[in-house]
Amino acid sequence: MIDQLIEKIVEMQNPTCVGLDTSFDYLPEDMRAGVSDFEGAANAIAAFNRAIVDAVCDLVPAVKVQIAYYEGYGEAGLRAFRETLLYAKSKGLFVIADAKRNDIGSTASCYAKAFLGTSSVGGASLEAFPSDMVTVNGYLGSDGVLPFVEECERRDKGIFVLVKTSNPSGDEIQNVVLTNGRTLYEHMGALVEKWGESTVGKYGYSAVGAVVGATKPEEARRLRAELKHTFFLIPGYGAQGANAAMLRCCFDENGIGGIVNNSRGILCAYKKRGGHFAEAARAAVIEMQRDLAQTIGEMRCAK
Image (cartoon, rainbow, N blue to C red; front, top):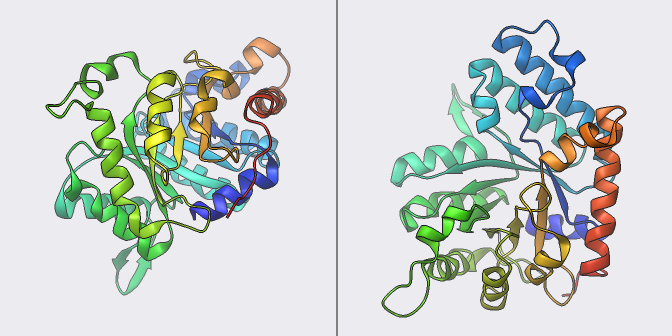
């Protein structure tokens, strides 16, 4: 899976991931008019997402769908979440479920099956929330991550483990200095590199990636130097304040090694640009692609 994602990024010369972190409030007024229940809100969100996907699927390799934005609309919201995953996949996009799951043992295995594997029902193997990759909170240790790694090995999937997040207060925990002089985020990064050893692909990156925020360039630079086989999911570009120059350090000498998420800057582009929301989203993606390309340079699949 990680090799295919890298090849798609190189083919498109675009490491942009569109974040479908879609709140009902982000929708244009005409799509919100007359809606007064969860069912209506979820249907409107799903329609909005389909239009965004249609507008950008020939430009970007992947979308990230944040489940919290859908859980807020109850059962109907989860249906919209699943429909969005399936629709994006039908358009040839890699789909990252941003669920940040975190638990241990058999419960972690259930989470892994829900997003990456299958569940057996009456002899049939069914996918609950079909995703190519899922975000994982690794701060419960190996027994909360290895079930996901097993699904990656079994079904050629991928995960992104939280290492250095883009939110300011992440420093309160992740920058704590351990007795050996290394920070907690560096220790987590080393674990991620170890967890991915069995899944390294032909371009040198494993199926066990790391979430590394673009708003933390110094920490990101250090992690890129240390984590030679770890692919980065990079939040923080745009609305959270990071720019292309700040995240260049997340990429290797071949211009690969990461994918950059942008959610509100694309979903809500119409509020600044005017016009139809899907056309504005496409224009925002093109602008972001140019911005990243100018900083990162040519992206190559070096073996």
